[in-house]
Length: 331
Image (cartoon, rainbow, N blue to C red; front, side, top):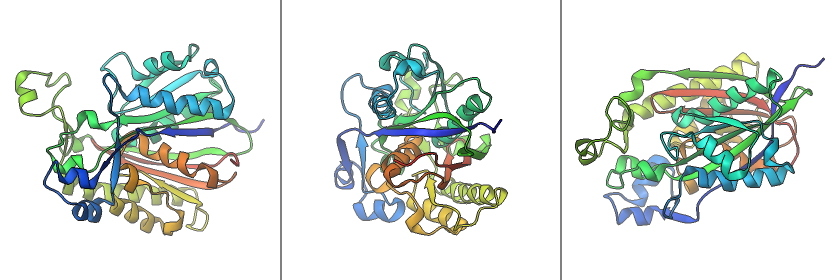
């Protein structure tokens, strides 16, 4: 019997309608289009507007589109792994909320929190359920309403993040296609440089924490940039070396969209030319867990069965990793 791999068989994405441009940010905080563009590569980002709308509402659009594209019913989904830093609630899990909203009544699910690396952590985790034979349809969702935790008076963060959601369906494959390898890493000492200072069990919400604005994302940019450039590039190169891949073998690099300079450094470390790198950061900014699935969604029509694809990410706390997969279908 052939070895079972977990293959992506469908992808879809969703971004909100409202566009927050650099020009609008210039009216909110002390910054400029030139400053933002030169340091991040970002021109605009999407923001989810509307009372009572959360991350799951973006996921509903993405998942319903995926189900229609794949031609399956929500009741066929067996497991939902929802990778997010901005869940609808502390509990219940946003995966459970999503299952209810799309009618995935036969699925169990949970949220996975690994900051910007969450989606590749989720893919690797979901693959294990497929490879073991336990499940045949696993939905991995990556999405964030980052605007809900951003202080728009803090130019170190408000220029970077946006809202969006993407998803991928994993199914068994016996042709040797699908996820081939993954390298996943964490270093909790990074929690001081990129994270949220309050709102958890260590520092629950109080008037003092709210007044101190400690429920917003906090980032020490230079430190994070240094760690991200090194680790994201190194792990992408490592997965190539481990699987005897040359730059010519790689059809696409799908990097987390945190910063154009970090993306360029990763591509350079791999020896991959810019025409093989998926980049949409200029239009969406950093959607955290949404960046990689949104790239796959936008580039889906250009992907060919058998393409060697390397995913790479770096996130707060710190988390980072890379996934190597062979694309399983022609669009």
